[in-house]
Length: 417
Image (cartoon, rainbow, N blue to C red; front, side):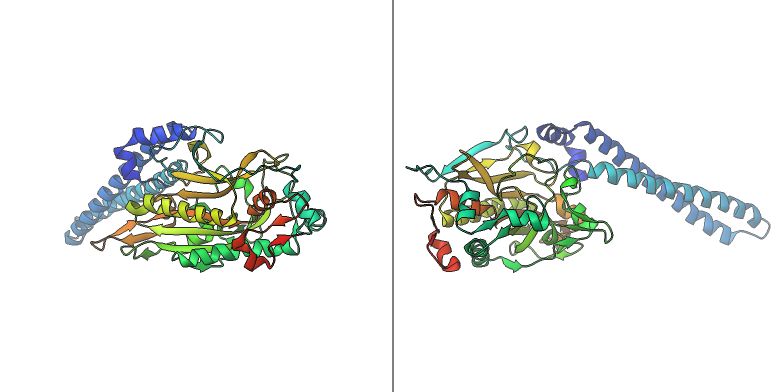
């Protein structure tokens, strides 16, 4: 949730953020009205409770003759207090609903618009030029015994797959390399639960516009996570952290699950858009004033991983309408996919400022020992999808694929034949 104090002092900034996202700026005024109504209800309730307390003292000091009338008045006052408390609860519920309806405030400088309105910040690496007709990742994966989509569909349905032989080793190697790099950069490795409670899923902002993409186990009222960002965001919920000596950094290795609702007909071939995949995700808790610098560090660590697999990529500044409700700014690294003639997302890093931490009650103590709301950030360090770019960019004329040097020790061979 956004900071109500910031909203009261800067309503036009929040309205402009809503416009940048392509969302309703009128929600800002609805939230301001709900905030004013709740504060008025609290004031009314406080005044009545103070009056009730003073009246109680008067009853205690009254003579036997005065007491019956005063007791009758006390009953009337108690009824008013009860009504005021009910009104206060109702006003609080309305405020909570209006508060949760507004996405995080987009950071100044982020482009406006939707999915196609990103800004390209940089191109890295040379796009390969083949003197043969390149194969796509699925043809390569099947011919080399790395991917089995047919049996994946037989066992689990469409958009499921088996990673087999060296394909499995390639995925494990990617994730292991990411884990090693995370540890070397001060992250604590985690293998988190992949089922979370509704309040944790809601706290991270994933139960909004894209809630239909999440698998829900109705009998248990638990959600399967689409990223380990979710359990890692909930890891310190309701806690006060010590962040004055630097951020708390975690890297979660988990399977991830996405229904991909609304994406039928898109990327149905191969392992680009699937229902289950593995990922190593970076997650940081820090002081809000440190968040922008930490965001650049996360992007730098993603770029280091992409350099290790030696694929050409570009960095984009994601537009407001494609940020998701929690992020104030997002940078994606998209790798070149030769057979598609385009770039596809491999990493994403988001600065969620205090939005998630405010929902989840994650705070830290400032220099004066006073609790303040923390900031949270996240970033991809490796996923199954990276195999698409590795296979296509490193394929050779004889149908084999060169294994990036950094992955050879994990895969066990330098060429997949």
